[in-house]
Length: 396
Image (cartoon, rainbow, N blue to C red; front, side, top):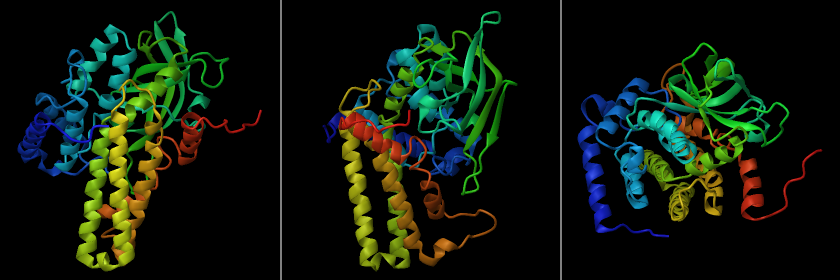
């Protein structure tokens, strides 16, 4: 694991930090530290404009190969980019699902025609993506999905019927990658396909799900004879599970360092509030702040270890523990925020949902151990795949 950075890397750090300082001004000044988990409702159109501005500066998809429209930056420089972006208060990326998930998966498994069609829209900040995985009866148990897709030979289109849920930014997206069952007789991981589906069509209905914070960043998505072209499938029918798992490997990639910088920003907000209201004089609060700092530091080292291996979508043991680690840490940080606020944590500044930043942190972090795979499922994955323990017994 390489922890330090070269002189060239530090020069690159100066370059990106300078660009962000010069550009997060004027029409984009209000976007600093806005957007992202728990705040996705903030300034969606302005953040889409920011994506296009990033693209003009050459700062989207920085780790992609030049042949796919990226900069081909080294892992070290990608880490620096994400760290400096979060440090500068860069807004939550509207294009992060396309850049971090859909794009790398299309690049790895798509045909040359699919790469030419879909990758430029992501790089240029013109087309935005959402993820059609979870369903009401198949959240963490992805192999239980029921959404169906059948190929209509006459029209040359896949026809989809079913429902997805917890679909982040579906209401702002142009495309959705959907795991659907193309073999009606199949069960479990067999008979699945990975389809690329346009969102703007009569067969798709998007309904927002209101959260505790009063916002609606994710949605239910209903497919009622929705269609997509026959060649908008990655791989072949039956390859869906393999491609879906590789996508999860890309999800635990370099952007995790940017996530950790956002966590560091939140920890610094907590420390500042503890100094302001005097709660930092409480030895237990000080101990918990120190534990939060230590946990975040360990998380960073594990991410660097994770990034030292091949970036091919494979899930190595250090990647398997990451989701459980960060989600548990973030929930504890939310609880600490409430204890630092004290009585202030119980008070809203106005009706009905004028939540403060730390109140929103606490409420939203409650979902961290559920979305993206529940903590219970994550522990099973660690036990079975990383430790080689026997699989959990299941009813027959």
